[in-house]
Picture 1: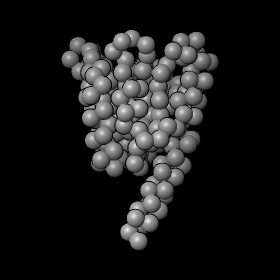
Picture 2: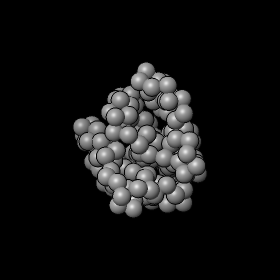
Picture 3: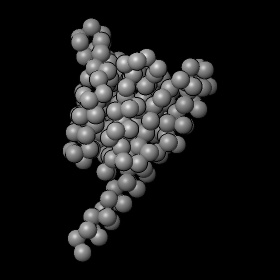
Picture 4: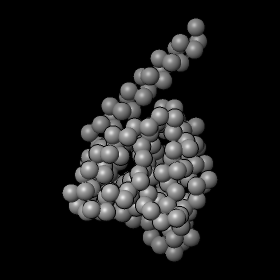
Length: 164
C-alpha cells in the first residue's frame, strides 16, 4: 500500500516547532508494511492542504493521512480542505476514532476530523498529537487494507466499463 502523510501545522511549517505527529503516523504506517511515498508539512491553510491532497489523489496514492488542524480554532481548516477533495464520505472511520478517543478525553467530542474517498485514494484526518495517533491508529488499522482493496476493485470495474 502506497501512503502519503501530511502534517498541518503553521508553527512546524514556519520552522518554529518540531513535527512529532507526522513521524508518529509514519511509524504506524510502516508497521503495517505500507510504503510512504510522500511526506509533507503545510501551514493551516485550506488551499495548501487541498492542493497537497489533490496531488496525492492524482498520483494514485492508496492512503493519504493528515495530522493536525481538526479542532475548533479559527485556523483549524483540515476538515474543510478534506471535504473539498473527497467525493464520498466514509464517516464510520472518523466516528470510530472519536468514540475510541472519548475513552481517553472528553475533548474528543470537539474533533472535527473527517474521512472519505477521492478516486482510489482513502483520506483520513488524524489529530495533531503523537499520543492521539498512538491511541487511534489501531482503531482504523484493521480495516485499511480492506477499504483500499474495495476502493480499487470498484475503480477497476468502472474503468473496464468505460472502455466498452
